[in-house]
Image (cartoon, rainbow, N blue to C red; front, top):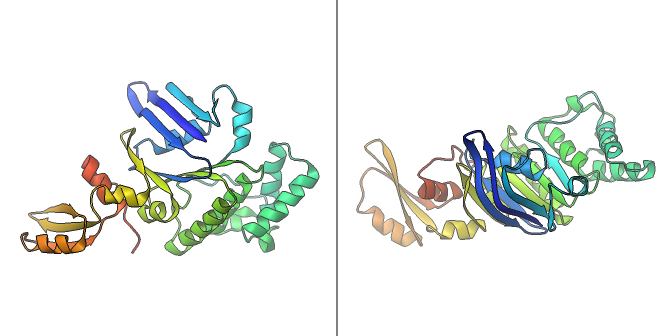
Amino acid sequence: MISYSNVTKAYGEIVAVSGLNLEIRTGEFFGLLGPNGAGKTTIMRMTATLTPLTTGQITIDGQPISRNLVEVKQKIGVVPQYSNLEGELTARENLEYHGRLYGLGRNERKQRIDELLEFSELTERRNDPAKNFSGGMQRKLMIAKTLMHDPEILLLDEPTVGLDASTRRRIWDFLRQVKAKGLTIFLTTHYLEEAQMLCERVGLIDEGRLVLADAPDKVIQSVGQFVLEYFVDGHTNQEFFMDKDTAIAAAQYVNGDIKVRETNLEDVFIKMTNKDLGVRNEI
């Protein structure tokens, strides 16, 4: 569905994305994980045709996005990190406005609005201004608005940033419903649990370079299912093992504050880049 071939984006001497090669399959839920400044949003903006490439090529269904902008944009729905709703407009009017921008006829707009308000559980709030909605309701409305023109690809840039844990999980359930409709979903996120819960494959990116891309469980298995973590002389050290018993046995030979736990995606990232993602799983 989406193919990146040697994609590079540079701003003067600063290289934001370097030599990206990646395939996102039709109907796949793919997540891109990395620290701030790693290049995630730049990749998302290039895919959405908002930022031009420096070199390389991005294709959607085999069509280069640089040569088929109108057709490509019809296939893409973009949910940015920050709200793009018209706060003074009602939920219905926000959807109506988006439908008009994409040239939907009156009857089609009405049908899509009714369907999406029901789908996003906002029917009873259809006539309320978007500015009066909670963060979770606004995020649902943003996604519903993006679905108005029936795109094949949904691009989500940090879709649950700033939301509390309970609201975040409701958005996850909503995204699972969206995925069930057959869309290809490309997600960037800081939340490790979000990536592990939602994505069929994840990519880890560091300083504009893709470190690896695979199913979350395979990414973790590549370093070991369990980690022995111990704090000595002001530093946290980690050793990885394929099974818990071996990790516990190894703990006998180390000093300090010791913990044996399951490996997560951040552990993999740190091992491969010697950097901290700066995020944690929810407690």
